[in-house]
Image 1 (cartoon, one colour):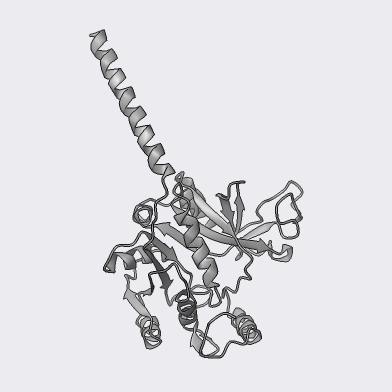
Image 2: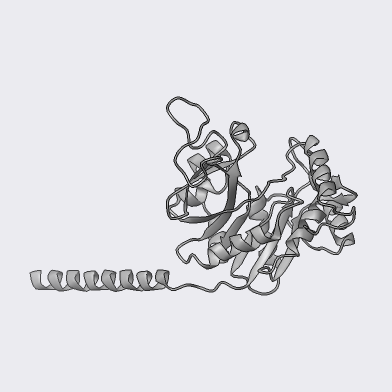
Length: 294
């Protein structure tokens, strides 16, 4: 009897060792994940800014401006707008954008991206969620975020951050991030992050001594298989507390690869931000019916 138990134990141990070796080998091999789709989720309803996707930025709907920027990317095989609103769909189609209609029951942009890609023909390895309220998003930042995931086989998600000026650290609409020394996300928060015992916003040892706080730019680049799994996961405590979807990734033990770029964020959170965006576009010399960066 003891010999049978011993043999069974040895067999189980051998199986675990083999499985561990397979996972290690699998994790060390770079997966190409070349087929990439960019999705811009857009909904009409917004607590702070109803109808935001259709607000005109120098005569062009904001969501269209974002789509135009995304179309300049080199890594994206396709760019679509995902919405449940006929007004948004019509405005995008008039400008040439491909639109996928999604359910009104989507709880957030991530679920909307997943549903839209599920309805698309063809297979994709990576899905990048591009927020529609960044009409001046740099295509290079999108490309670099995609490449970060492609080059990090141990990650299921990648995103981008940029140094944040001290005067903006206390702003709740600015999501902050902290990283480990290998470039993986440790945490995201709407509060001051990192915090210190005296509660003061000040420099701390980092590669960015003048602007050590990091602003999350909002790009969410998913491994396609993980995105389907993510949407089935129940909400997590920190995700609900901070109202930040990416925390569910970390709370479930998965890795998020982060790139740090020099990029001036131009997100539209409130109506007064529209004027700031238009002023910036005029300084860049952008005509009213174009969105290419110079």
